Amino acid sequence: MAAVNQTKIMFANLMRKKTPKTICKRCFSVTRPVQNDKPLIGFIGLGNMGNHMARNLVSKGYPLLVYDVNTDAVDGLKQAGAKAAVSPAEIASNTDRIVTMLPASQHVQQVYAGDNGLLSKVVKGSIMIDSSTIDPAVSKDMAKAAESKGAFYLDAPVSGGVNAARQALLTFMVGGPESKFPEAEAILQNMGKNVVHCGPVGTGQAAKICNNMLLGISMIGTSETMNLGIKLGLDPKMLAKILNMSSGRCWSSDTYNPCPGVFENVPSSNNYEGGFGTALMTKDLGLANNAAKDTNSAVNLGREALEIYTKMTEKGYGGKDFSVIFKILEEMSGPEVEKKKKEFFD
Image (cartoon, rainbow, N blue to C red):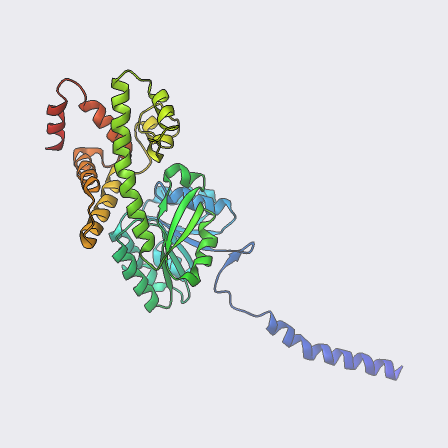
């Protein structure tokens, strides 16, 4: 009996010695908050595109901390399951995975480097993915500022439009360190079908402004073509069908047709509301034309497209989807077409 008691005492002492070690093994600091094995993601910018992108992350099970100056947009995401932050700085101090989707270069500079900006509280090792379409030089500046804080900035502008954002079918053009691309891709693939590494920081923006210059040009061409066909007596749906099975086929004709009634669920069939604003297209064409000047590239059609969209914005169409060029051209048509054109573009 004494031997048995001695064995129990020895076993109890052994367990007491092991218990502290076991507890210590389980003690660790969580630098990346997780929910169901998915990291908390900060998301800033809940406009026409960003709102759908953020909702797709929520629907895929990611915990989300969001910020936008539009409180209605924030409230909508809260109802979808996200939590709200009061500033970019609060997002930076609470997570090391952040996505931004903002209108222009100045907004990116403010959100990242302004008062209460992300870089004021960024956690070392954080990955910040900017899906805005901005000047490549600004992306490079933000990357340097992030690097000085021990963080990583990647530019990842998107293509596909509002419907693709809604359906998680966007294409992301990513510029940044190749070593960080897999971590960025793991997040972006929840919002898109194509995630392409283009090279170092700034190359994502370079690819995007080239794409949008072509998009702006092709939308004008599609609008002119649809207007001409209708004036020649062709049914617009039939004309679109012919174009889309022929060599004139393009995204502006087969996915985002500017003629009302050809497709449902596109801005042209909703009084050109929503979608990609004319002012934003003007901004992107401006970026492309500035890049063309810097590189001595000939972009004659790109320059003419910029002039057209600039005039559209000045005439009050900035908030309308950029496919509203069809309506403008339609209204110019008629016996006094040259006079109407002169009045609009002078």
